[in-house]
Amino acid sequence: MATDAQEELVQSMISLPKLDGVSWRVVDQATEDPKVELDLKVVDEGAAGALKFKAGRPMLTVLTDSLKRVKNELQSVSGSQK
Image 1 (spheres, one colour):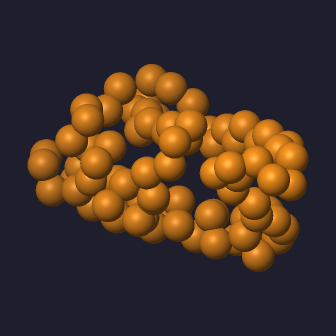
Image 2: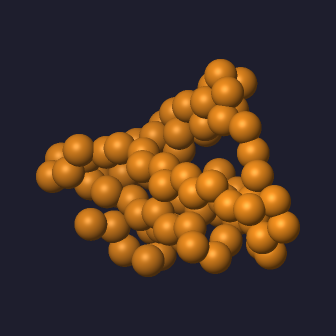
């Protein structure tokens, strides 16, 4: 599993906001199968702090492109440490 410093580095590279109730972690692909898990909750229209978005094809394309950039950056960083 990655260290807190590695997770902070990845978060800064892809500009992930720090949101309440949202968590993520970096995994070592050699020991754990990487995956994206989304836990979406339906909230009432007047709920405080509700985050609303549509995850259509354009959003998934942006997410995929961001993850590819992170993967490439991590590979270049790990390659420079060898």
